[in-house]
Length: 384
Ligand SMILES: Cc1ncc(COP(=O)(O)O)c(C=O)c1O
Figure 1 (cartoon, rainbow, N blue to C red):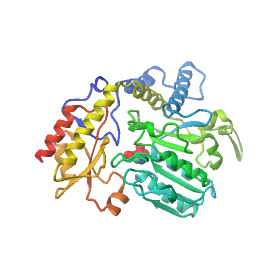
Figure 2: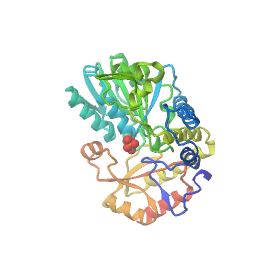
Figure 3: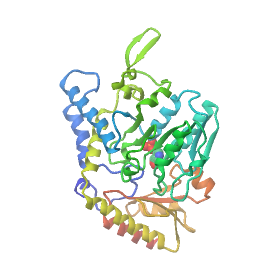
Figure 4: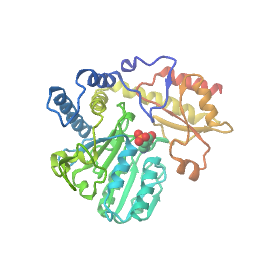
């Protein structure tokens, strides 16, 4: 694809689930910020700053539009990454806001560890529920007044929280709160999140063809549950000797609650460019990803020595080979220019302690993936 023209034929990048490659328009947007109007947002009056403000504000709107959520109900804040966003919320949730914290067995360490630390700090029970093979959750497992933290797409095999709307409804009906880890959904599966109503959604721009950046999308009425403790410049209207007045008390500045200090203005603007890029992708590009995914999935599923974890084809495919160390296999692939991941992909509890799998190998595809890449991967795996 032209927007990845910089990718050399010998480089076969199969680690999109970690970080997607950045298309040229996103790189250009970041470069433009640095070379054309490098300035601080939300503070300065000169023209460069006004350009930054206008583009940052447009990105907030683009995020909501991409998720089909209303700016009457939700606001958008920027942070470092998914992990930071989830921790920022959990560390500031008022004591007594919930009675239990719930997460699932297939979570990334990002919510898995953050919920552990939250339960300890708030001295409340933490419960790990299991997900059905298709990724959905039996809602009868959700107790009263729980904080539920779940991914809506897994970084092991792309399985999704198929009944996300039912889970959100059940959590709210029982007086609880729900945060969705959308790190793996934003690039290729955003439709699962669209028009849903969780209390917050956390994701990473670097997994959706954007720059290195985190995003929190939160319901406006959710902030009443927060006790801001991570505070500083850019989030106050006035400060006295022992007291400050939060800008987030103003409905138009709710986003400041999660944005202490100077922000990554260029990256925020480049995220806007990545959303434009995703929205403008022709159907043929999406179709190509489906075709390449299916081709690789069929090979992995049919090979007698390969144990594929996936139940269905998704752009994230994990497996192991009987009698062959995945780290060695990863090294052998790397020697041929194939960039794959090996190990437990930050899902140690499920993969190692529940499923007792050996370390795995993960191949994750993206819109940059060429049919020749898949051909080479299949050839290399067959040979090894
Ligand atoms: C499902 C899921 N959640 C959370 C994360 C953490 O993302 P980050 O490292 O950008 O914070 C990842 C990263 O791979 C992920 O796949």
